[in-house]
Structure formats: C-alpha cells, structure tokens
Amino acid sequence: MRYYCNMDSYDTVRRQYQPKHISFLIIAESPPPAAHIQSSRHFYRTEKIRQDDRLFTNTIRALYPEIADATELALEQNKESWLRRFQKDGWYMIEALKQSQQHHVTKQQRQQHIRESLPQIVDRVSKLATPSTKIILVKSNVYDIAAEPLRAAGFNVLNTELVDYPGRFNQQAYRTKLAFLAKKGAAHR
Image 1: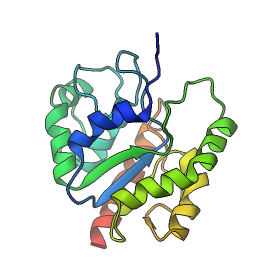
Image 2: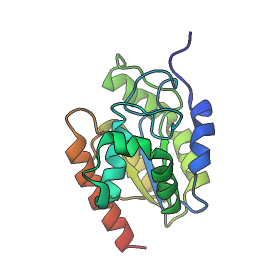
Image 3: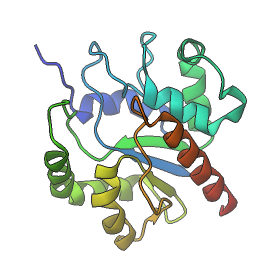
Image 4: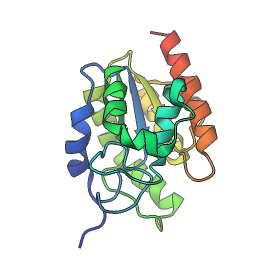
C-alpha cells in the first residue's frame, strides 16, 4: 500500500483551482501524503472534512480577516467556496518538491532534495508566474534554498525572511507574516 502521493496526482486536484492569472504564488515544501493519510498539508483536497488542516485554515484566516475567528470545522465545511475565492483573488499554491516528505526525513535531507530540484522549481515557476507575480516561500527549507535562485531568475520573491510553516507552534507567526506579505504585495500591484 502506498501512503505518500507524488505531485502529479496532487496536481490534478490542484489544477481545478488554478487562477487564469496568478497574482500571488505560494511555494510550500512538498505535496501532502495520499488522500487517506491524516496530514496538515491537504490544502486543495475537499473530498472530506479533515481535522487539523493547518495549512489551509491558517492561510484562509490570514488572507481573509473577516473569518479569522472562524472554527476549523466551519472553514472545512465551506472549503470548496474558500478555495474558489482564493482562486478568484489570484492566489495559487504549489510545492518545491514532487514527492511528499515523510516526518522522519531530516531537515538536511529536505534541503538537499530542494537543492537538487532547483532547476525544476525554476521551470515550474516560469510556467506559472509573470514578472508581476508575487511569490511567497513557506518554511525555512524552501526559503533558505530557493529564495536567491528564484530572485536571480527574475522572479519577485516577496519575503525577505522565512514564513513559518503553520505547524503546531507556528500558526500565529504564519498568519501574521502571510497577512503582512499579502498587504505588501497588494500595495505594489
């Protein structure tokens, strides 16, 4: 039984929500595991209500202050409509890596995987982004390895420091930094 999906199968789900013009591109570390595995990274999956869908709920709370205090259950129950609004507003999220990373993979190994994938990352971004697209890199692994190569390739990376992944202890930091970058990017349209 395979527990971790690859990006190609998740891309099929994700592409349903790709905006015609991507104003903001968020790049996270890796796609979620297979749909039946509990994970905090099932951002674009809507086939069932998930508990602890931290990447989705914290992203939506950061970008849409009117629902900042909504419960996770309320957000999950309306996930499809929030993803459609995210899409309509020009937001899109991809991952730096093609394979989901299991928890036992070390930070050094993750960074090496990202380093080895830099040509593919730059290629993927070039197919999605224009010079006006605002790019936000999530998690230290992605920011530390990919920020400068993406800037050198001519892309507009907004963050000048890492945006924490909204894990158990970084949810508020993620929401604060993402909300700040969204406002900063909107001011420069």
